[in-house]
Amino acid sequence: MAYRDVSVWLEDVLMAISRINHYIKDVETYAGYTSNFLVRDATERNLEIIAEALKNAIKQKPDLAISDTIRIIGLKKYN
Image (cartoon, rainbow, N blue to C red; front, side):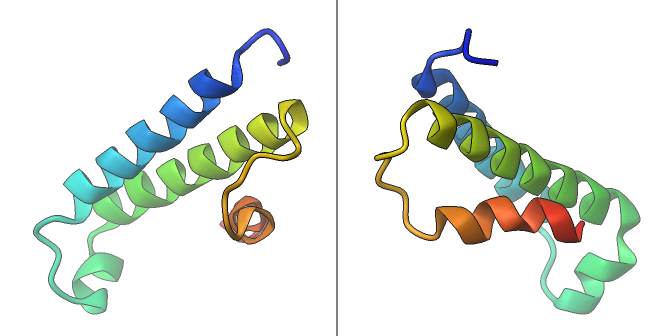
């Protein structure tokens, strides 16, 4: 997937973060989150998108300064 510029991968990250914020804006508790399958599935899918986008961005630009990149990418393994 080297055809995409790093900025496009980072835009994917920002969009996914924005979507997660939208999905959880009315969720007040962890129990509320876990009981709402639609919110949970949408949030977890966007976490996968963030992990994948960062993985690809780091491949193209290994010196990209994002803290905890390896941990974020690792989220994908646990969903």
